[in-house]
Length: 112
Image 1 (cartoon, one colour):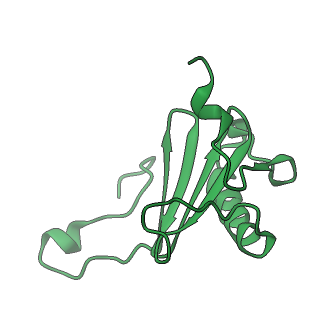
Image 2 (tube, helix red, strand yellow; image 1 turned 135 degrees about the horizontal axis):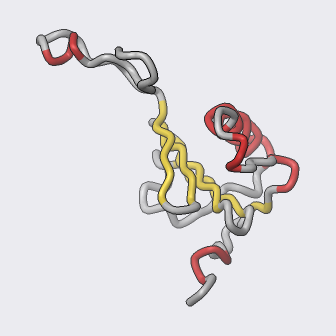
Image 3 (cartoon, helix red, strand yellow; image 1 turned 180 degrees about the vertical axis):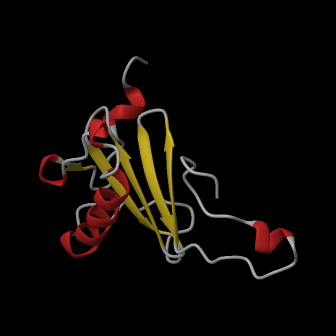
């Protein structure tokens, strides 16, 4: 990889090699950050500091938010903190988060 480029070389894949396995995907859409793994999807709405968590295996249509369950949300917060640590301006502060706990996030209605 050239210096200053964030990522991993896919040259081996392009040459017919094995594809690297990614355990989870971190992404950002506006001020909404997300982590998606094989089982869980975690959303953080930075503008309102709300969060949601869905079990994609048990709830593929994302109808039951598990963010109110401390045993599940804690590890997801740790992983999001690791992803956002390289960008301190993002301001991810787990102790200040507000679980939506199966309520619609206020973030989706701001400015509506």
